[in-house]
Amino acid sequence: MQSPIDWKKWVLCQEDTGELMQCPTRSKRGDIGAGYKTLASNLKQFVEIGSLPLPVALDALDERSGVENALFQHNAC
Image (tube, rainbow, N blue to C red; front, side, top):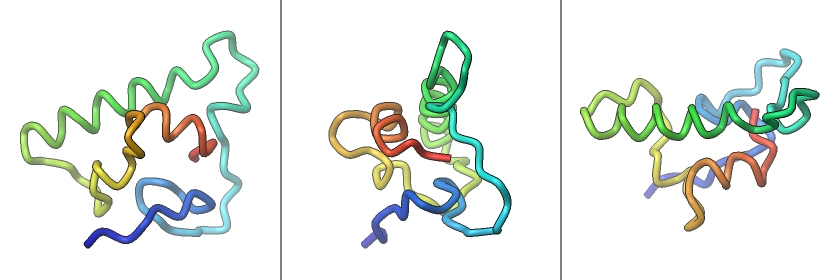
């Protein structure tokens, strides 16, 4: 069973490096959170070809409303 995501850490590697984290939902750009859409799409494609290069399971990031929405709702970094 996959451990739950700790949204206070780097979302994909689940590490706390002490580095300053930048969150796409705090962007001053007009397309706030657009990076989440791209990331969700890319992760899905990696899973489809069996080459997800991360230790996190994609389904752990999906809280029944889609990966993009979960990332946005949790202000994932």
